Length: 159
Image 1: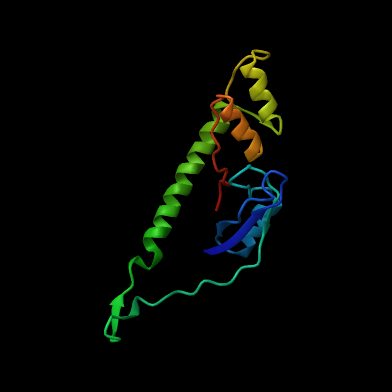
Image 2: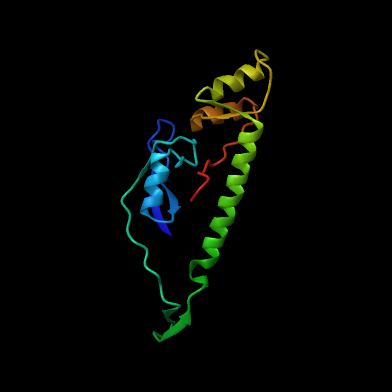
């Protein structure tokens, strides 16, 4: 598996931090990018670019630790990242499941999300489950107005 640092270049996320993407290999990344399958976890957009990254090196199973008397001891490294990878896989699975349920049970309104939500709240259109894009500020304004919205990271289905 290869971990890339990714960044969304959409107008909604230009001030957001980078995020990680895991891919089987460089070809898998390129294929998913060409097919528009790499989405921003913040806004769901596909204007995601790969940033320069450094390779990860596998650490040894033991690390050297200096105690208070300046003696160096060798102790086993904790988990060697295995637990962290399992947790990441579990979270990704949960987020993909949530995404599929949202897609199955709601209508995608894209950039019209905020105006559509407001129209529903004002009774101009019939309320129904929707999903789409909004800036952090717009979503916060909806919440401040007592409108219940949830921002869910939108991850691609295959990585």
